[in-house]
Length: 502
Ligand SMILES: [Zn+2]
Ligand SMILES: [Zn+2]
Ligand SMILES: [Zn+2]
Ligand SMILES: [Zn+2]
Image 1 (cartoon, rainbow, N blue to C red):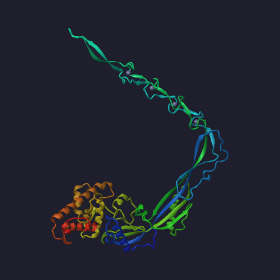
Image 2 (image 1 turned 180 degrees about the vertical axis):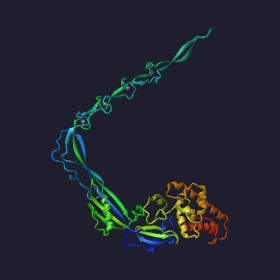
Image 3 (image 1 turned 60 degrees about the vertical axis):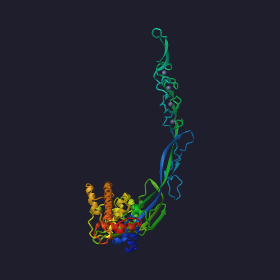
Image 4 (image 1 turned 120 degrees about the vertical axis):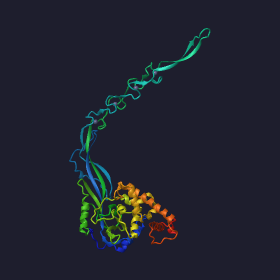
């Protein structure tokens, strides 16, 4: 792709690129090691981009009509009210901030009858809706439940009865309990309410029983003064835009530094004569013109342009493989791979799953690689590196730990065929940015982990005692050996007893 603003001075040699990629790879455990050495760089093209950052302080004005009670004071209604933009308001002095200021517009006073009360000074009481009374909250219709009989209307009393026996037996007293009508409520179960004297209603406390209250709008004056208020809102806005480097997400580019090519402060920036590049100047003016609004005044602006170095590196993994691209950008020499390994030069910036990138610290993982990869007869260290990145990224959340390091070797065919058996409904290729594929990816990782565990057990029980030669054809032997080597190299601490490592 052709650079928008080719700059002959910016260059990056192949040796520098290799060093940057190697350094980048060594910064995180989950990145491909010696990335620079393992690819064949075909071309390096300088495609710098420009970050535009503008801060604009605005002043918005609007007029509101307000009313307040009129007590008969002198009115300011002589003369023509000024235009709202002619009124002097203290402006912020060249700092960016958000605040408001209200100013009464002179000569706008007007007296009128209060619309709320129609000039009556009184309005209907909101509490009793004008009746002057409210329902008694202590009772229901003036009657309360009788406290003595709890509403039954009955009370019990104890009586003694003389019982006469047969023949010569003497008479005796027998105790009996009988229900009688409640004394307190005369058997009704309810009594008259004490609070409202049985009426069921109480005088409204809000209006004292009058059913009306003083009008609040006019404070019972019957008239109000109308006047106009100028409402001034000072606010600033940040705007930014990136010109060029469409393949790299904006959030990545805005986190790196470059060379400042413009830093301008003015009341209102309408020219960018400082920029010698006419195309860039045109972009800059277009960018600035977006912030003009018809309903606000621009008080002052700040405009900065940074030129970010971006180098598009085209490379191949093998001499007969497809050309791929990566980008080295910013003074910090950040590295970016596109979400797809096989990006075409004209690919527009597409939706990129930033979460996946943040979680794995590695980009450029194509899920389809797992299942569509052609068997590579000549084992190369590059393929391993790439597989490691893939496996690490995929299995990171499953805490497969060190064993993942070995996933790059000889795993794919048996793991993939097991996966196909178990997940026959899986899509033909897996996309790790696709939510719907997540269960399948997890499944694949579990199968890969189980397979690896098996391989390790087989190696420790069956492998010959003698040290394996590097030319050993046995896949398990090779695997085990490389596991050992990788573990020692990467961690230096992990202990694992495999015969070939002894
Ligand atoms: Zn009123
Ligand atoms: Zn009331
Ligand atoms: Zn009672
Ligand atoms: Zn009551």
